[in-house]
Image 1: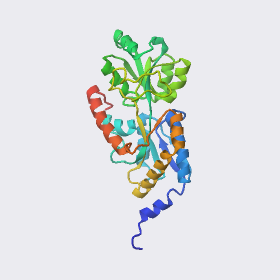
Image 2: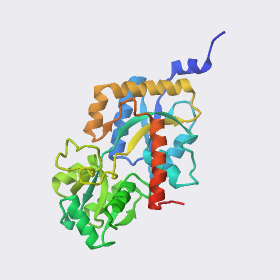
Image 3: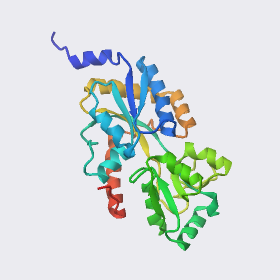
Image 4: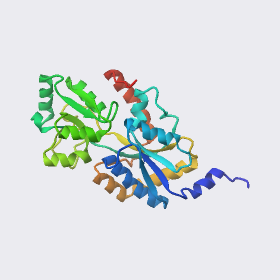
Length: 311
């Protein structure tokens, strides 16, 4: 038949069965909760179940490889973060995937507001007092992260450089064990997401000294931003995006993109995302391919200046 296109015919029937979303984070965490909320909303748009498949570990590399190697039929998507798509490819020359070549970028989901928190045993209540304490005892204190190159690692290294302080980095296999050691006082401080932090801030188990956001968080109006305190280079708002394997037919990725945009345009998505402590990314300027390119370039400059490498 003249003008018949099999890819469009496939897309008209897509999705006709459940869709799997691979998530690079451990079950029970804030990003996992976001992924499941998004999957529930996307399932309504798709009129098919959307199932979250957790593949945590290796700073998102395990999940990213799983998405890249999945059948390119639209039935496997991935929720990946800035670490997997823009940081790891800069830090590691032997990744099992290429962020540039192995993914079709569906769209941005949300940003993750991060706070610098400290254990109460440090007896500091402000960023200025923390800097004073660190300068008086270089190397005495340590900070945790979800791994070298993770979104919880690079902001702290940027802050160390900007404040002329030295804090020992202790990388963990994920954020959860790092948080537990900070709560126990075995590690003095770390960057932590708002959703995880808020309960511990309210109980007094942790103290927030600065936010890595552009403006103060509505839920923590008394916590100033790094920029307010004289550290404009310290920014901590990593993003999450939805991707598919690179060879997925364009008509199917277009259908997935349309579904994502419809979900993100609704008030239900904004409300759910904000309740979980994230910032929805609904602006046309939040193009995922552009975010990956720009943050890859920024990471190259940062790791060169800080001499960070996983190789």
